[in-house]
Length: 184
Image (cartoon, rainbow, N blue to C red):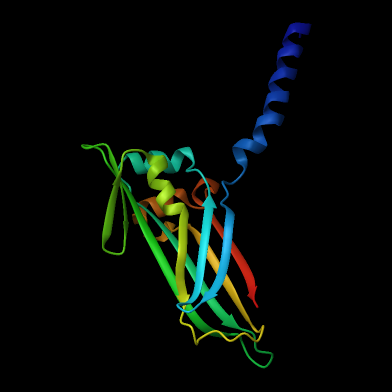
């Protein structure tokens, strides 16, 4: 082989070595803000997640597949003699859709829907939650035995069944984060 062919082969292999980890890595969700506070209203959680939709997930959304995001906060009490006791549980879910005729993104939570012009604006409404009540005032004692388990991410179990099978364990569809924090 001529020297020029070896040079191009070396450049190609170097590009693969540099780009392969970026292509193969899973998209992740980072929690920029995670704050639990006690008040007269009860136990309140504020969080801000940072993530971008991978290209394949965004393509599915544009083609009419609704995306479901879920945040789950569970307050548990440590026990040495049995499994930890669930004291409180709160779940919040969002449904993100794209309306191709009007070119509007719609975010639904509970019975409320809100329209957005861009995907970035729609995702901003999903990424943040402030002063979310996760427990009543008398449910959590100040004894140091309680802790919070928090999960946030894309819920692929609500996708259409054929899609669930086809995406399998693709890393692009596993947008999630978990956090455990002791309550003092």
